[in-house]
Image (tube, rainbow, N blue to C red; front, top):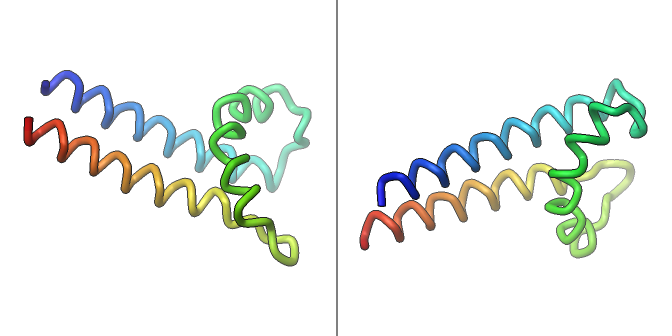
Length: 85
């Protein structure tokens, strides 16, 4: 069970880091840059459902922040669930 908890923690950490990098690069790089496109292959499918529910307002996109909160909440719930088993 500890292996599964470790896997969940590593996956959430990697997704969080990729989300920060993707958000940071969006200020400086073209959307067609290979690095940004590669990270986007992982992050965009997670952001798109949030963007459908909460559209960007006046040029601000809050979906990365919401995704970060959701990742942390779901991660903690999964870890607590597997620790209780």
